[in-house]
Every structure is written in C-alpha cells, then in structure tokens.
Length: 203
Image 1: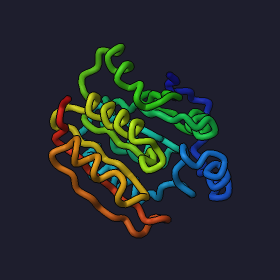
Image 2: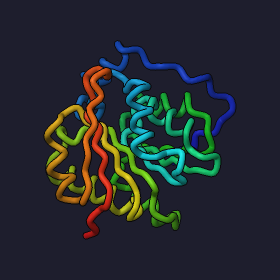
Image 3: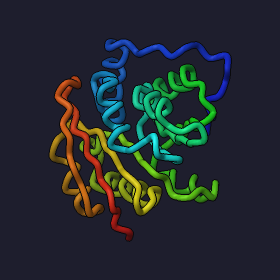
Image 4: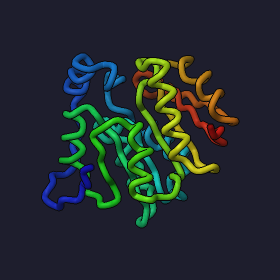
C-alpha cells in the first residue's frame, strides 16, 4: 500500500490523449478506455455514489485519477479513500500527482480489498466505484470482483460502475443486487454507461 501524502509532489497534470492511447494499446484489457474519464462523468459518478455523505469509499481502477480527484474534492475531511490500480504507469502518475492523506493506493488486484479491510478492522464501505472493464474479464474474474464489491460495501451502500460496453454487466448486477439503474453520459468520449447498484444480495 502507498499512502499518497508527500508535500513535495508536483501539482496534478493531465495525461495527454496520446499517452493514454499508448497505454491502451499496450494493455487494453487493463486500461479499458482510449482516453481519461471526463470531469462531467466524474462528477456524475460522485453524485450517484453520494460521496459528500460518505465516510469510506473504494475505487477500483483509478487510472490517471480524474475520478479519484473528484472523489477527494467531495469527500468529507475525515473520509477515507482506498484506490486500486494495477497498471504501473498509471499508479506512478497517481503517486506523483495526488497529495492527500485520505487517499491510500494499492497497486494490486481490487479483489484483495476483502483481506485488506479485514486486516484493518474497518467497517463496511459506504460506496464502491469501479471503472474496471468487466467485458474484458472472464466470467470467473467478473464474479470474483462483484463478490469483493459486495463484501466491501454496507447494506445501504452504493456501487457505481463506469462501463463502455452497454450490455455485458447488467445481467451480473441483477444477479447480485436487488436494485440496478443505468445512466448514459453521451458527452463523454466514448459515451459512458453509469450503472448504480444497491441492496446487495449476501452470499
């Protein structure tokens, strides 16, 4: 785990579209998008997840941090954000650009949050946000990730997933949650599907 709290880090800089596209072609199954998430989508995600009223938030697939930064802008001062990112160039960018003691970066699979939360003796999280491209995962990997979400979130918590494939994730969500809604943000490139799931079904 890396706690991003150094005061010597430079101010946040956006990754260029060319750099992001290069990362996509190098590891498209992990990166999952051809450019950074727009600020409008990041704000909408935080609205769906009710971040201003949350104390503990997890983000699966932080990327270069546009959603991470918006979460931190809205998260209460005593809040906690655990971020997971396995693509090393993106993780390095996060380490260099986010200076906030509420943010803890894990450079490993998001499914490990089950073990991390138990080791830290933390209560369930109020919100879990994911940009991991489920359509690039195997069914087994997708199921394991959703199990991690359900194990992590509280009974009245919120799961919000940003996906570019419109039809892959909904059947899985309906299998694991009692309430699933979808918003489409057409002004993102490409258009973003925002799925909000609540009332998790415990195994």
